[in-house]
Length: 353
Length: 106
Image 1: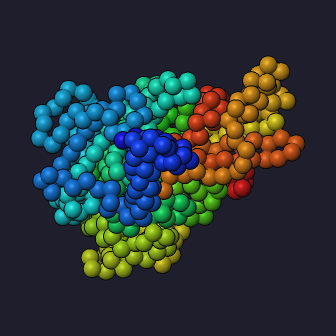
Image 2: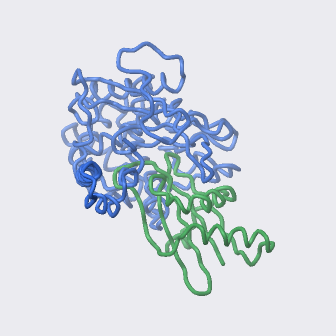
Image 3: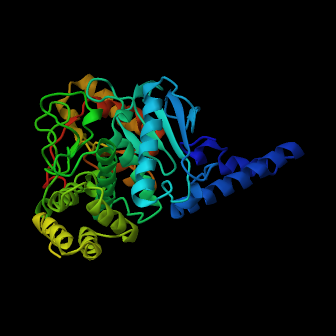
C-alpha cells in the first residue's frame, strides 16, 4: 500500500464513479470494490488521526518487538524488512543502530516507568533507514532529517557534509520514539506552546535514554542533543543545548545561529515552525535541567519521574503554565526539596506558579 | 515579482530561506523563475500540514506581484507535485536565516 498519499494512490472517485456504471460486469465490480476500499481508507485515515491506537501494530510477543526496514534510498515507507526482533546484526550500520536504539528506548521506558512500548500495550517498534528525499526530477537525495509519521520512525543518511546518518544519535532515536509515546498519552497539539511542550518532552526523554545507557548523572551529564548527527565543526556543539538554549551553534556557515530562547520573555510567536515548536522548547528544556541539577543524582530518577507523570496528565492544549503547575503539584509526592527545585527552575525561565 | 521562501522545522529546527525580487535578476533568470512559479500552480493561500507526523520540514512560499500576495505552507508529506520544481530551486538558493521577531510576526 502506498504510504505517502493513500488517497492519491487510488483511482480518483470521479473515474471510479463512471466505471461503476460500465456495461461490462467485471469493470463494474472492480470499480465498486475500489469505491468501497477508498471510502474505508478515508474513514480509517480520519479515525486514525483522532485515535492513534488504531495505527499501533500489536507485537507477536506483546512486549519488545522491533522491525527495521530499508527504504533503499527512496521516500517510500516502510521499505523492505531487513531485521526483526531477535535477528542477528545485519552489518548495515544504520539498520543495526536503529535496532539497538529502539531497544534501548524500549528498555528505558520499561525499566524506569514500567511502560510496555510506546502505547503501553506492546506495540511493534517500526523503523525505516536510508530514507531519502526525492527532488523534482525524481532524483533521490539523502535526507538530513529523522521523523515520526504517526506509525513509525524514519531516518535519513545525512549529506555527509553537514549531517551524518541520524541513527548515530541515541538522543534522536529516543526523541522520535517519545513523539510516539505522546501520541498515546497527552497527545499535545503540535503547534505553538503545546507543540513546544511536545518537542520538549521528546528532547527530555531522548536525552534521558542516552544518560541512562551511559550512566551519566545530572551533574556530569552532557545536556546537548543531536551532537552525533552533525559533522563536527568549531562553530557547533550540537543541535540544541537544553541547559543553555541558544548556544548550541553560533555563526555557523551552514546552520546559522541557534534561535532558541531561554526565557519566556523571548518566546517566539511568529508562524515559522508551527509557531516555534523546535524554538520555544528551549524554555521548558532549561527548566528541566535546572530542576535535575538542583535535585542531584540521576536525572531520570526523581526529575524524570516527575516529568513522566506530568506527561501522562497533560492534555492536548496544555500551555507552559499548565506544565509548570503540574510538575510542582506532582513534585509534592517527592518532598519539599523537589518542590523547591521545580518551582525555582520555572521561575528562572520566567514562569511563576 | 517577489518570492519569499522560508524553511523551518525538521528534527534540527533549522531556519533557512531566501528572498528574491525578479526585477533584480538578469532577464533570463527572471524568466526561468517566473516559469517555475507559473508551473507550480500556486494560486491560493493555504496551509497543508500533517496532523500526526512530527519533525517534518515545513516550507512557506510567498509570491507577491502587483495584483496579489499568495502564501502557501506545507510540510514534507504535503508537497504539491506541481510545486516540486519551484521548491527545488528555492531550496538551492537558501541560506541560514536569523529569527527575526519583527518580520516573523506575520
